[in-house]
View (cartoon, rainbow, N blue to C red):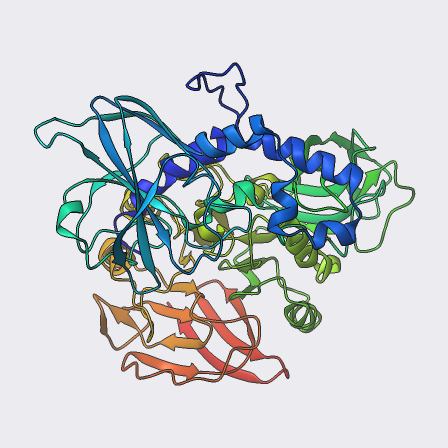
Length: 593
């Protein structure tokens, strides 16, 4: 990804909240949004269809669900803007999309015979003339095709000075159409070629690939293997403030439970304290057996350092053995475990439980992102929480976002609803996406590399410049150095800061192999990890067999395998091991400062 990522956050925020806006542009008195129509339709489907019928819906069956008023909303309120002069609007639709959006021809669009290309597909060009005023376009379809259409706009009179405004979604990025233009903010390396001369220099309105989910009905419905009940489950620990004196406890129930309390005490003590939890309702519209749940978060403060606590979710009876946590003692000795991509896999769950069994001393678990396959599918998060449930009820789970957690540019709303992390990140990034915490003598920069790169640089430098920690770790999804897809923007923006303040290790994933670099500084190998940084990539699920090329900066590499990493710190000494699924130590090294 490149600098265009800077434009993505504002676009996503507008997209994610835009469905609740009141639109007054259409001439009818119907002010519903696309989101309103889909919500009404799906709610009715749940009342009238079996799960088998929902899973087998065809496009023809879906078409029959809507009234004429519904179709008008779906055909005109998906993408809107005002033009100040008469224009020609071009809609670029992938020829690989089997079903043409239902509204194109009825709304007066004609296929021109012109095409444009990128490396993934060819787009056919449909056009329609509009008078000045409001332009409204429809949904991409009901099947959630993965390459959403995009548009360009040109004045009918070449001498007119075209202006576009009042966009829906808001904060629309407007570019100039030409060879090399990108169309998707979540994949800005995917650029256009073979632009016909008559289309060049028009105003190009970009989008995100995943917008088709707004109207997804064909093969859209899912089930969770672990639906909620009236009993608390998915107990999970995180930190949103100082680990020495606080912890956050989270869980879920079904919607019949509307309040929650945590009772806690020092282990072995009879003095019990209580904290009421904050409740919020989560919705996964297409999760047919568990659409709504309640999630609870209790923030425990003013804890004693170096103390083990027991807790219970009231009114749950008794004190359950593994509902415990410990605050760090006032020394500089501790350990932690981190994982590469895990993708809600039961195979990873087995590895996580082995890691916990082998290293019960680990204070917490850290993750570099791609926790699930699709971050807006709650059933996948349910899987993720189920497999290591005895671990995450005792050890904090600290994660960063990967591209799958913000799948197809749709954002990470579900992540924010489920995790409680520090809100100390840069203003330009959504709260809790990027954050930092200090555990004993180590600083952890948990960075959202799917958010703007350059706009996080100042925050990263401020964190590094103002810490007194001996050890410094940066954890984010996209590895700056790798054989397949080196991230030059990260190398340019963040690596100089890692060099300046000597970040000891950078943990990443994404490429699905294992690699530990030699000590690196300014992009070159140096003699010692006291002078350079270890860049490490790992994978928490079995990786595929393939040619992994050459990397002259690498110290250890494995194209296949499945690993966890265990790091133990004792003052100014650090030991590192990577362990495979069979329990074998695949990599190890030590650093002494």
